[in-house]
Image (cartoon, one colour):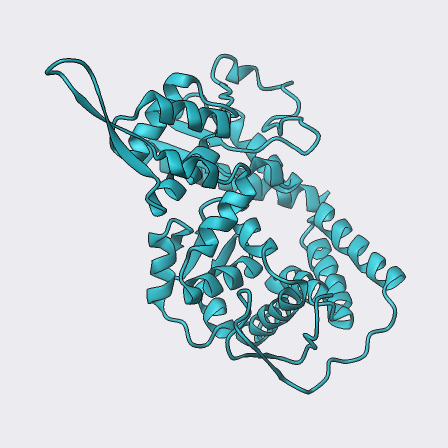
Length: 363
């Protein structure tokens, strides 16, 4: 009973904070990646939505479809939310209309486009906004566009279109397009982007700099200029899109990824040595990916205990399930060798980075 009351008080305290803020100025609450929301956060959303219709609060949530094609729901059960009748709207942004697609293309290019270019982009992207943006940037970066004059007599209009020679060179799949854009980055920036992708979609600059010791904020800013990521705060960045992060991650060899996951975990352990409790989950994940199973098992147990002590029951169950899976399926692992090997910068490998893990061949 005390546990329930404590949770209730916390949820309503957060709600009252938002209401108080909205009384000072209209408030927008944005929830990104709803498809990944946890049950505790959903409880907060449900608490927030009860009785807020008289306050200047606008809540917007974005999500992808689940893998089975179903939609993530902000409110799973509408019972008790009659106060929101007529106030909840759903926008399906899966595909843009022809009019909106043309507006997006011309906004991205800051120019009028020829019908040939519109037809090409529509056939390739099927009106997907992210795919369209990435294809446009690819065309610009490779100088695949040219000006075509349209009109009769004295009236003529300059319109952008795709060079005929470029049609066969355009990647047809989104993942191939993203990889092609990443491959075009400078060698040093590509290394930084790939390393950051191992940390996660969101990453802290101090951890990245500890893994790649010879980088500077200039390279981070170059990544922002190249539309790879954007700043959340002075020392925290987020990839522009999860698919861009996934492409940077998946284009690397397994052997390199294991090394990087180990180095990220080691950086977190060192930098947060005074209190690792909020980093148990991250450490378990990275040591698991690095196949340092004794450490992964230790941190999965600690992460499960920490989540249980804070009444995050679903998270606790997840970590204990991962713990049991590793205990059941993983044979005893020898301790990492003390030898530290140099990794050359080949296919995006680490330049001068060192790790106790063997990297002879791909796992």
